[in-house]
Every structure is written in structure tokens, then in C-alpha cells.
Image (cartoon, rainbow, N blue to C red):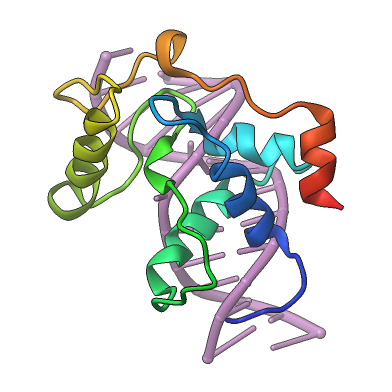
Length: 123
DNA sequence: ACAGTGACAACAT
DNA sequence: TATGTTGCCACTG
């Protein structure tokens, strides 16, 4: 629940906070950056856990909407109260999201962090 | 200690 | 392109 030391979730949040406005990346890419190429599902789980975060002022906001799946599609199951919300926020940030919730990664994919920046987060 | 869970991903059909 | 299947993994009761 409320861990202290740096864990996988915290590392995920740290990376997501570095995604610039107007760009997106995938669950798998984040997992790979952190050295866990097969932990894509865990990344999604980490973001899902954000909704359980109380209004803790010491917890910096995480732009979770900038994370989509490897196909450039929004992965939230609930369309009405989830996917559409994510699409709306992304559009407000300048990202073009098609009617069927697809995003062109060739245009909006975030380059990612360099090794030094990743080390800073993982250490 | 261990089985269940889920905002994934790759591959098959 | 659209499903379905299988492998993965961190976190949870």
C-alpha cells in the first residue's frame, strides 16, 4: 500500500512524469527502460494503482494518460468512463486520437530517456 | 507461502 | 484488421 523505499511502481511513476506534453509511450517501452522488458503488465498495474492514491500532497501528479499500448491504442477497458476520458485529455495536449482510440506512434511516440537519466531513477 | 489479478505484448489464426 | 491464446511480472490478500 504505502511503501517507503523505491519500488517498481515508483520507478514507473518517475518515468511517466518525464513524458513531455504532446507525446506518448507504451507500457512495454517503460518496462524495458527500467530493465524489465517483460513487465509490461506490471506497468499497467502500476498506473491502475494511481486511482487508489489518496490526495497526498507529497505525491507528485503522474500524467498516466500519456501511456498507451504497443499498437498506439488506448488500453483502458471501460470506454465510457476510462478510454474516452484518456482520449479527451490527450487531445487537449495536442495528440490526435482517432475515433476508434488510435494514435499514430510515428508522430507522437516519445523518444524515451537516455541511460544516465534511467540510472538516476533506478538507483 | 501461494494463487489470483490486470490500463501488456507477441504470435497464431 | 480483428479475435483468441499464451507468456510475463509486480503486487495483493
